[in-house]
Image (cartoon, rainbow, N blue to C red; front, side, top):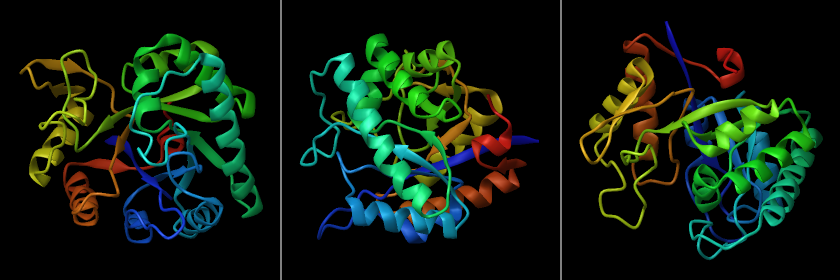
Length: 257
């Protein structure tokens, strides 16, 4: 039987602003990446989201991003490796405090947005992020884009890693995600997204925008929780994965490295 983790970025509301449908989508995922206050989230939201995840028995990970609340952490910033290390260490520590206070345990770390995409290609940033994760807890699992510099940096350091793929994003022939600035970056059809996931899990490939087969490893699938039809898609993909003999479990439960 095939096994895969379903993760979702959560806790990205802040102040008077609500983003996503955290409470509704949690029953359909196995890993929650909780924002740590830089690109989204605030202390109260962090606390509430941690509790929601624990109540739903969904494993918890930190979702550190760039300090760009207005741009939602999706705009590239010129940062040094030291700055990347410092900001990731800071954010993991903040969320870990809430997790421990609630009686839980953190499973993983997944960078957000531009920080994630920058670390996928820039070795020095990837190594700085992996080092920050390792220094907090070498047992944490580092999530990164399948085949990316971030995953390789984690593996070199001895961290457990999870190669991540995306249900609702298109790919380029080098294995990178199509930039959100391009009109074809997002997959809006539920059926197209589901078929892409099934292919990635069972065949280990994805079809790029250039029509080429790209080899990938699908340990965990990201479901974005802030889309207009995020909840209905989460329900749909859980149903279809079951029909396709694909077991949905957290990365640690899957026994992935």
